Image (cartoon, rainbow, N blue to C red; front, side, top):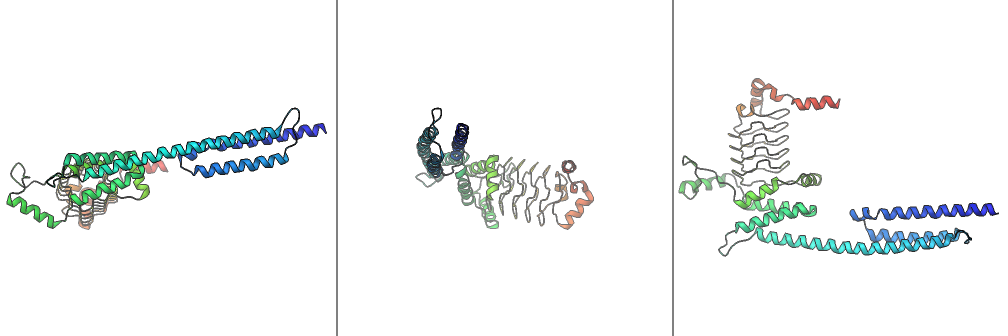
Length: 362
């Protein structure tokens, strides 16, 4: 009988030990629950209820206390500790919630103030550029700090550009020509010729902000399927050097004379865009759609046109294309393709780095 009693006590000691380790393991997960915002209250309530039920179940199974070991007392003490710890965590949870709500309120206040600055006008109804610039950079800061608010801010900024730098095509061009002929426009070159106007300071600031989005935020946009929409915008002579505009919608945008050196325009939609005289040195146009785009005088030196669709591109010459880095898998009009095959066949071949990667994969 004594040997059975000893074995029984050993068994129940092991049972208590397993239960304790299990509960401690659950409490160890609390920081993860907190981090990923898994409903903490529901889990804590479940933990308390399961502890009470398990304690009651064990009391039914546990033998009476002996001189050496009191399993019921240890189980009761452990349950009390667990419940006290759970209540403490509830208090911490509500404290965390108050801090989170306060932070969200601050972001909302900053957002509202920045939007007010973005539309600031003086007594004469003219925009106050310096205040608007402050609003733009404030929005950039919020977008950088808050992933949740990032895309809303990008939508606000792109909508501002589409409204305040709208391009209506030929009608807009006719208005510009009339202003220049009448002397209203003072934008002239060194020889007195008509000079394309640059974007306003606030418009340039916004496209700069959009163009320097972090890798993390751009990855987030790609995962969500979001697209930067700058369609039908007037971005003549805009500074877009090294701008990160992969996948952007630039349909019918006027980018005449724009500086796009080193810009990432991978998969960008440039259908019908005006790229006359644009600088595209070393730009990445892989997979970009340039159907019907005007490329008259565009400098394509070192540009990556792998897989780009250039069908119907206007005023695009073999001389321009001879300076690009690659035309591998690019789509060209039949006549232009024949000229490239005859004069620059290496441009249509798979780039050397791709061949190396492909062999390495084998």
